[in-house]
Length: 127
Image (cartoon, rainbow, N blue to C red; front, side, top):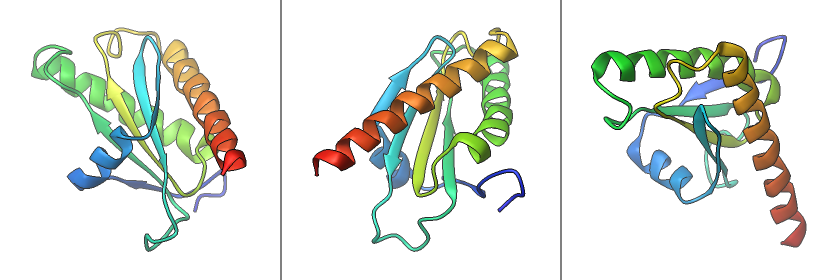
């Protein structure tokens, strides 16, 4: 855990990406964010975990790698502060991820997280 926020861990296993794909998602111009609250059955619910995806729809390898680098930097900057512990986030790059101004990309992620957390709180209330 950092002094400024929650610990970060990355998703590496395909089944975790597929589980996040079945959960809530928010679409913004610069990226798509999928979020899943992990159950108590998993080992450590505390770290914020994230994964990155950039498909060939984005463009060639250079464009995909640039989008992934930007998403990784974005996750490391925003998720420790605004991500909720016990959540898995998958950030999906879009055509606009690489050329989008950094501040607008940060605003996209922040607004998506806010909406996802609001929906998660609403779902927990109804259970």
